[in-house]
Image (cartoon, rainbow, N blue to C red):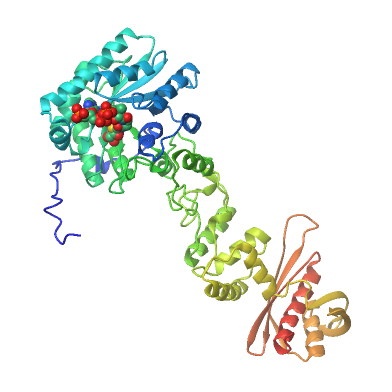
Length: 558
Ligand SMILES: CC(=O)SCCNC(=O)CCNC(=O)[C@H](O)C(C)(C)COP(=O)(O)OP(=O)(O)OC[C@H]1O[C@@H](n2cnc3c(N)ncnc32)[C@H](O)[C@@H]1OP(=O)(O)O
Ligand SMILES: CC(C)C(=O)C(=O)O
């Protein structure tokens, strides 16, 4: 790396608006979307899509709600050409969907492109030529006049074809490729010539697509360029301003959003940001950004996981696990404080199911994109008490009391510190059972019991199975639990003291089980035990017995 990169990468002149309106604007509606997955996305793949993949992706794009789909660069390859033919001849294009095809401004390529569209009921023909100084000087060796003439020649050829093929509804799209580093006055001049040549009308609208072909500046500069252009456009009727951001600086989405604030009403991009180099703007992120601001995007991503799988298969490229909204890990919290906040959020949401979505760290309800809540919390050494508690609640119906959560969290922490890995829910459950006396066979189990209340409290007689041997105990207390504790302490010479007790049922069904959580003091130690039984009284007694089993195991390890 250079200590001073300024000579190698001199800062470009940027348009400086004296006044700009876009910062004060807010987004209030979705743009017109155009998917370029089958063209710009496709041209960036190691192995371009085959016909079958293109068709499957086309159908899925339609299902998502795209009404404009750039389906091919028909002059590029036979695959692209025949794909367009197949769409048209086999009537795969729904009546409210426009297919779009792209071409350079070269007569032979335009001819082939238009041949591909033969018989289409409606079509968008997309013509482009690069307009920036670098391209005029280096690639085309053309001056400004020749660059304009190239565009006008292309538009004229297309217009003449449309005139003689009026059974198709035509739209022209013109892109001054490299718009974002073209002199604004020149971009405006060439587009003005295009307008004059095409003569946009109700029947033959025009799309002016202003691409950030290579993203070279901060998104505010792009927004300034769009606002400058839109505010000076001589003809606006029947002209749509479209943007086509790339993501070279990692700000493609920001560019598109600010461009919309600045006056663009149509956006071209690809699903999950596929495309040349670092990709086209990601339409899924853009759409769901709108959605999470309460604006209907007009696109349906309710089956997002399946869409990811299809796009990964068609593109031969993975979608990153942290990809906004779509990544496998984006609805998952590993860290303790996040888990705690999420869990509290879900509890509050359950109390007010119709209230607006307000779950910390989850800007989108995973259910809205077809995901469940299973993966919302996962546990590793970064997790806190809420992580394991949530998983036990979701998977086993347990609502651990706070102090038990804290106690169990320390055990989980010890386990994850040893492995350095995630502790899956099955292992958390096994650890919980082992810690709180729920393993089978239990060291001690309650066989049966009987109680009798009198003026001085309650007397309990219980039979316990200890390693196959039945022993009878008797104790006295204010209630069943204290009487059992008394019986245990007396029989085993222990001094366990009840500190805390909670119980709840594990499910709605009448035959469901009850769970009892018991905390006892044992000398300096605090001990927790859990009992589960179809009968809540037995669950409590079993919890006492389970604590006893653990206390005895410490004194007399097996
Ligand atoms: C930013 C974008 O994504 S634009 C879309 C780019 N997509 C693609 O290129 C994918 C499909 N392209 C292809 O398959 C091929 O490029 C083809 C079939 C279209 C053309 O192939 P070739 O005839 O070999 O031309 P090639 O691709 O090398 O194009 C370069 C030539 O076209 C000219 N050219 C490039 N763009 C344009 C344009 N928009 N309008 C007119 N001429 C152009 C160049 O100046 C160059 O001319 P030169 O050979 O006289 O120097
Ligand atoms: C042709 C245009 C729209 C393009 O793909 C680009 O500039 O990236």
